[in-house]
Structure formats: structure tokens, C-alpha cells
Image (tube, rainbow, N blue to C red; front, side, top):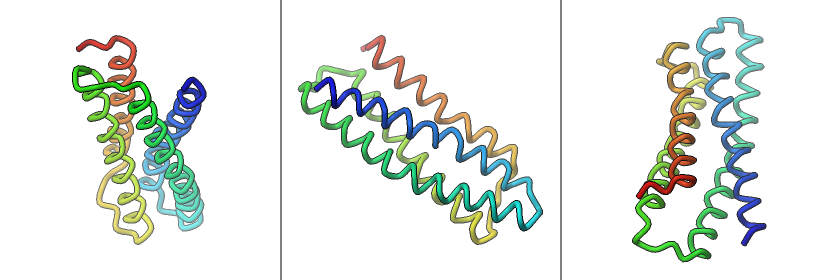
Length: 138
């Protein structure tokens, strides 16, 4: 089980690197008006999103393996809260994919300021998950 936990932490860390960086690319996409820069940033965003998807899947699958392997049952409120936060991270990941599609077709409707705030969501969710796992408050 320790190898599964090790791989889970590796894939979660890698997934979060993408969750932190992709919205920063969106900030730059929302600010640029140069076609060459736009094409370069879109290419970076596409490649990063494609890289993030398997990391997200592996993180979640290995997390479920740990969940089932340790037999964490219904009396663990902190785990249910963690699973809710991970679900929100999955929704955030998919929202990033939808935003990328809008950038690709030139239909972005948000400002660079929106993306700067949007970029803080995974930081907050990561803090919540870490606090729940370490402190197990309920």
C-alpha cells in the first residue's frame, strides 16, 4: 500500500502543477492580441491540458484504491469532506477544458482579472484537502 500511496502523491502533485499553471496561461491568453503569441499560448495550453488529464485520472484511481484498501468507512467525516473537495477539483479541471475550448474558437468572455482569481481556486482546495488529511478534524 505504501507504493500506491507514493504514486498517488506523485500524480496528485503533478496534476496540481498543471492546475496551477493552466489558468496562468489563460491570463496571458486573455491579455494578448498578437496572433503569433496567441498561437504559441494556445499550443502550450493544449499540450498542458492533455498532459494533465491522465494525471488526474491516475490520481483519482490511486486515491480510490487507497480508500478501498484502507477500509475507510462511513465514520470518517474528514474523508467525505476530502472526497467532496476532490470532486470540486475534478469539476475545476473540466471547467479549464471548457475555457480552453472557448479560447481555441475565439469565444473567451472573461478578463485576465477573472483568470487571476480563478487561479486561486485549486490553492484553496489543496489547502482544504491537506488540512483534512493531516488534522482529520472530524
